Length: 207
Image 1 (spheres, rainbow, N blue to C red):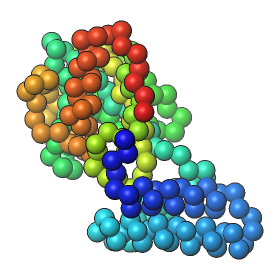
Image 2 (image 1 turned 45 degrees about the vertical axis):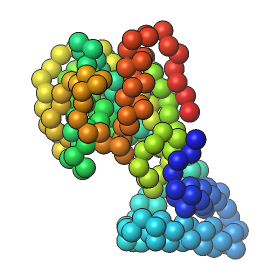
Image 3 (image 1 turned 120 degrees about the vertical axis):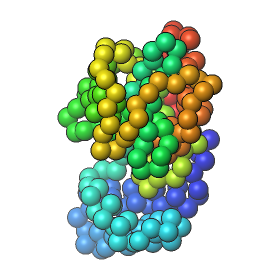
Image 4 (image 1 turned 90 degrees about the vertical axis):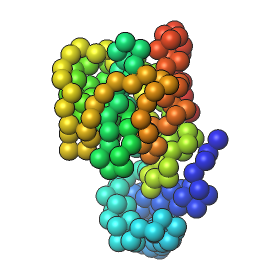
């Protein structure tokens, strides 16, 4: 079930429609209409989010070509029936180590890199556990539409370290964990990852 605010759902769709239209349109009248559609999306996002419209414009200016969801990858690492999480400096909540996949980077390499950069642990990606539409799983609103890839990783070694975005890497039991960074990782997702731990033959989740 899509649980993002209606205004954000509409604004995301208008922004995507405008971006794709501007990527392929040649007719100057159509180009101007798509630009106006984007201005409407920018005003909606600024009005309801409370963020400055120029900040919204700068973010959307960076998006080119046919509009598709962004890809966020999260490393699911267990030790002694506990899951690895890191503390986000942005909001003080805890989440699985991860972030955007870079262009030209396979998902397996992306998640191994993100876990290393954010926690200090070396891991090997072994199984795709879930592909979730961020809008469907209780996260706080975000300007862009994301798909979240949860990848099970084997722990190889290393020492906990901080990064420019995170601090305090540690392992937590399912029923004893700190407050979560809901923008990145929800209670529902946490419990589902432990279900995958206890039932390793479960198929990959999607949607």
